[in-house]
Image 1 (tube, rainbow, N blue to C red):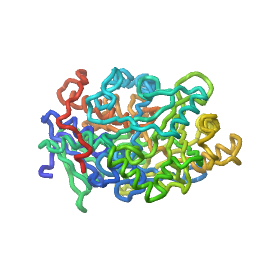
Image 2 (cartoon, one colour):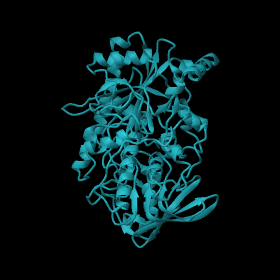
Image 3 (cartoon, one colour):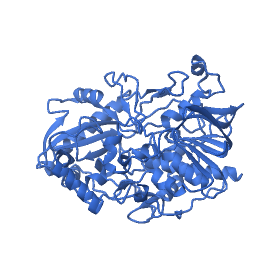
Image 4 (cartoon, rainbow, N blue to C red):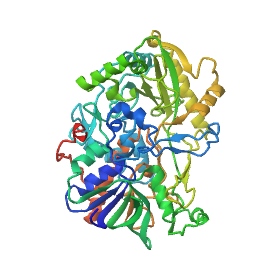
Amino acid sequence: MQRAEFDYVVVGGGTAGCVLANRLSEDGRHSVLMLEAGPRDSSPWIHLPIGYGKTMFHKTLNWGFHTEPEPAMAGRRIYWPRGRTLGGSSSINGLVFVRGQAEDYNHWAELGNAGWSWDDVLPYFMRSEHNTRGASPAHGGNGPLWCSDIKHKHELIEGIIAGAQELGVARTADFNGGDQEGVGYYQLFTRKGWRCSTAVAYLDPARGRPNLSIEVDAQATGLVLEGRRAVGVRYRQGGEVREVRATSEVILAAGALQSPQLLLLSGIGPARALAAQGINVTYDLPGVGENLQDHLQVRLMYKVAKPITTNDDLATLYGKARIGLQWLLTRSGPLAVGINQGGLFTRVMAGPGTPDVQFHFATLSADMAGAKPHPWPGCTFSVCQLRPESRGTVTLRNADPFEAPVMRANYLATETDQQCTVEGIKFARRLAATKALGGLIEEEHKPGKDVQGDDALLSFARETGATIFHPSGTCKMGNDPMAVTDARLRVHGIASLRVVDCSIMPTLVSGNTSAPVVMIAEKASDMILADARGDAQAISVTTPTPEKPALADAHH
């Protein structure tokens, strides 16, 4: 890095940070520095979709966080993987393209966040998207982020779809076309068989710009503040603590766990808690680190009657060679899919409304996500409640910026969350028992036929449930006393500072969070540039023309 001053300093080179780095440097008028704590995304396991299993516990590419012992989860500490490389969690996630429900964003607007209704955010979803089906009224065909169909139908997924239809859930080709309810195949963030992370989609085309600097292995330790204005960032790189100035804005894009941590370390947060850690209070902002929400998944596993699963593909040298050849020749098959092929959104609770549970169907089974597959044909039905009521916190363990924050998810803390989770498990069992799956599902491996009754199923959820990797909400936008950012994502009470990542969600979206974070960063980049022009009202969404194809193949 040749200079120590930039117009914009983006903290975090993850899902949102890569989008911001591209968009803020796009017109050449602004100098941009992006700081990423992890290394470059050079590992082949990042780029091969099935490498998800290799990065799940990777010591360098994954922060490998754990919650505190969870009272309602049998006192267990729940493992929370988070990406620690360029592309962040988009470089290690399950690749699933889901936007959430229109109602999610309309609710954000109803909470007082002007500009965040479904009609407001849809253009940004579309701007980001290169859907292999082409452009349509609901989808983009020319954006940087590739959303691809799974090439080949799978006998087991077809059986699951037919079984769901027996239960009254209609088959759908698009979970993102307006009506989320249905069963079908997910589209994935892949391009020609390779993962399409935001590093590949947004950062690779921008790397050559003279006004964009990217620093890896550079972990932020705190904000540089002058009074109540953010003017820079301190970070450690190569054993040295350095400081960089931001003449326009500092933008935190470190994720729902580390963006609040950096605010707290910088004296922005609940005054009493900061004083207890010996941190000088810059601004008493009580909502920092509060409102933590996550999707809890409960995984049911089944033995399959035919050797057609990914367990079987990976069990022998012949199987591995066959799927390797399939990928090399056609860029398809298990190596190109990763883990989850099928999805289902439905309602399991009484009363009207939108889907309240989501399923991920994997033609693979293992004792935990990313672990070694079982030695028999197996599949997994993962179910999660979409809109949990339970709220947790992110707080400081101490004033050391290199210590992981204290994370308390508080899963299954409310009766509604408990009931919805149990009903989701019961729906999974009804699905597995359908006529369509009669010749495919051999027996239930977990929880097992002896686990019966709501109390036993709730105990199973408490003893085995895990994150589905969507922590959010810890710097929520709004104008109530617990809001951290306003509707333009500016931190309340601190000038020249924004947060742009999952933490700004006031309520968790109904589905996977990667696409929504890209949307948030696309919208934020327009707001930031409009503010720089002194034109806060003139935000226009244009369909991008990429400078050059973001070829995942060229990444290697």
